[in-house]
Length: 486
Image (cartoon, rainbow, N blue to C red; front, side, top):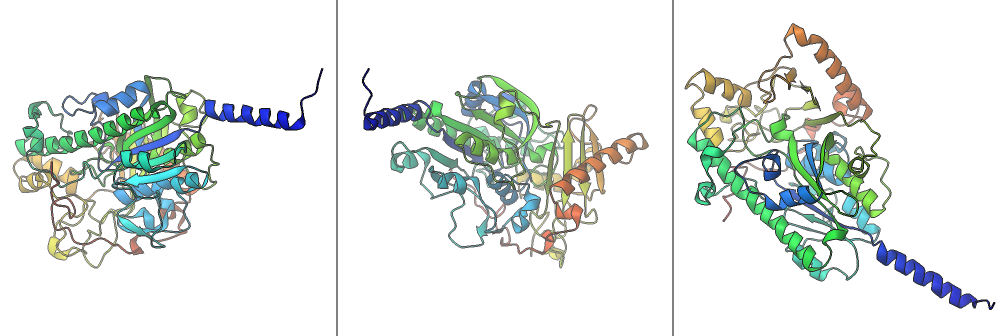
């Protein structure tokens, strides 16, 4: 038997490695993230009006999550938490809206990019705000759109892309939903809204933009199919918090902090998977780290979803934490603080602790005294729904009750019995029958917050109220944006 020359053996070994790599290429990563899209507004969740065929496809061909929550129901801190895999209260100034992202925090696109992935972003990424060092690319280079990125990236190189959008953020083209053919009578309003044509029309206009975001994702899926990359791409589709309506965005109820979430990756995730465990979007970064083979940084708070999706997760997914710091400085001058809240949600209860119950949860109703000149309930986007609820607050007891739920001051402790009150309308924290539950959940919440180094609990770290606010005075309904074109 003749021995192969050493060089030939080396060449054969290299060829074997190459074949192994070709058969098991690193997965691509596509994160599709809407602006102000909340649960349960997708066909996969049973919404009878909004049409989301592409989200539904991802859910059908992958996994659908029923209990996904953001770290904070506010754009900047929610997005910062996703990028770092850390709770927003660990991100210093970036725990607030319109803030500065500190240099000390790495993002998953940066670390995965260093590991050899092509990175990119289109439309809204992190923000609003600015990076501590100007010009820092938290998500990679900006591209006109995803198909352009696919054409320009190095051939054969795996990618990690953030597909952003300004939909369905306000402002809306009024009447766009109805004109598109939606049956407004079939809209399922949240129970904390009065039933009126104005509000139904406003929700339909929001749905119109949800559908536009869904079409954007559909275009990205088509581009992947065209390039033969679909089945080797992990796609996650979600939103940064609830819809921009009273008691939703900037609130820690399910209407503000709970979001749609679907994940497709056929090489790892069985089609038709349905998950009802509690997950947070801080789990996105460690999921991408694991999928790409990049070591997860030690400061990450979240946990990869992959073990959960294949039934091997050993952690406790029976509850989730979320909270809020400053959205807009909407209190009465000279108070530049926010409305700090922390929440613990499980299948039976939602418990919230409001650290500053003397403040207005949606901002002061007196715009002449607001910290930001002219701001009016500044933590709630201006809208037909907001205007209707304020103008009709004294119409009857029902309207007054719903107005108070959205805009009135709240006690330090809130507890909602989800078996009896799934809409989270009746605070039972003051009921003696629930005293033991309040103590138990509060103790658990504060213990978890202390473990994560939350300054609100530990007393150590930054004062979120003292970080600069970089935003300006709203000039148009919806926080400074003109209605978008159809």
